[in-house]
Amino acid sequence: MTLLSALAGDADIQALLSDAAEIAAMLRVERALADASADAGWISPEAAAAIATAIDGFTPDFAALEAGMAQDGVVIPALVKQLRARVPEPHGAALHKGATSQDIIDTALMLQLVPIFDLYESRLGGLLARLDRLAYDWSGRALMAHTRMQVALPTTWDAKLASWSEPLQRHLRALAAMRRSLLVVQLGGPVGDRSSFAGRGDAIAEHLAHRLDLGLAAPWHTTRDPIVALGALLALISGTLGKIGADLALLAQNEVAAIKLEGGGGSSAMAHKANPVNAEVLVALARANAGLSANLQQAMVHEYERSGAAWTLEWLTLPQMLINTGASLRLGLKLLDQLRQP
Image 1 (cartoon, rainbow, N blue to C red):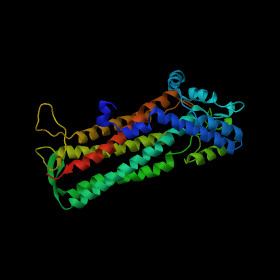
Image 2: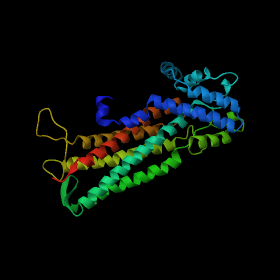
Image 3: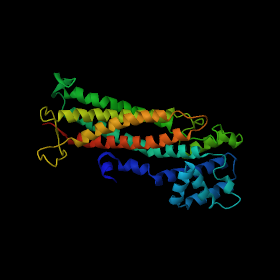
Image 4: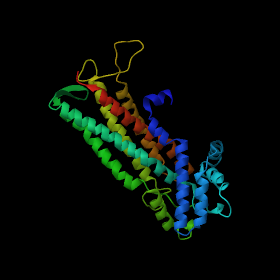
């Protein structure tokens, strides 16, 4: 963990997106692909069993994978080379048969997103439960509203808390819907039309989806709008939490004093201060994800049937957005736990 990640990171999400987790997901896809290919008669059951045995006892050479990534722009050629060395003949050619690197990488990403979505849903549920509790405890309490940074008219905490809760409820519903629309297998072969599977591609994809408990979809190598939609939802979640953070930082100002935040951050020069650190970081994460969401939209533009540039931009952008969103949810929970009446 770095100093910055202690402030604005998320160890749980970072672990789920680590190199080790990514390679483990890719190996799971390769094994399921072999089994699905045998199910569809594309390779023999004996070949699938040999591939499964090779994968079960496999320890990757990460230095070689790093070198392969730097050389090829994707890690799969180096990974398949290491695996094939463990598969006895005549079954080596059955490994990865008909597939392309993008099939493995994209499907592995879907597998990594499953526990990330689980964590997001759990934290969103925790936030909503805390807001419900605050609404019960503070029901009917008066609060001065502010518009355009100026004192406006009296309102209530009921209205304020509802304005925080309702968008989070929408995001939770959107996340559940996205499980069905986004978490699907990728299987297109080298040019994304399944022609490399000699007419068995649809059957293999169906068996692959079943074995991995993912949805079934047509190949989507260059159709990245579902990924961009995920980025938009991540920006909405962190944006809503940034709004909550901004409100609480302002309400905790000494001259406003509408709330108190217990456990505020200290100052090296002013011992009396209790800085609203978690609220501030929520605002920063919201702004960061807003910018990254725009970057992710740039990654929609693929040339022809695959773009190395667009794909690399997606890799540079989406993982950080996932971490930022996890951090926003984590800090949102902490911030609500700090909240007290003055």
